[in-house]
Length: 90
Image (cartoon, rainbow, N blue to C red; front, side, top):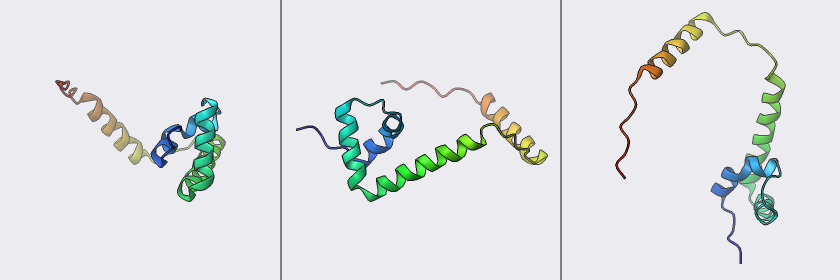
């Protein structure tokens, strides 16, 4: 018996599910899960709607307030200037 798909698996595999790039067995098990799990059905619908809306906005230019632009640039510069964290010793 193949392992069941969990809600976490659903989140992790959702983009591949929508793109139909999963192997047939995984796609089928995920599809079964999506048809029987209301929270995951809602997540799938929300994900699709967000993708649709962001696709509509991709070619539009948005003017942000100058103050926000300056704060964002300052934040990004500070983040870039931070030293790299030491590598973990595992």
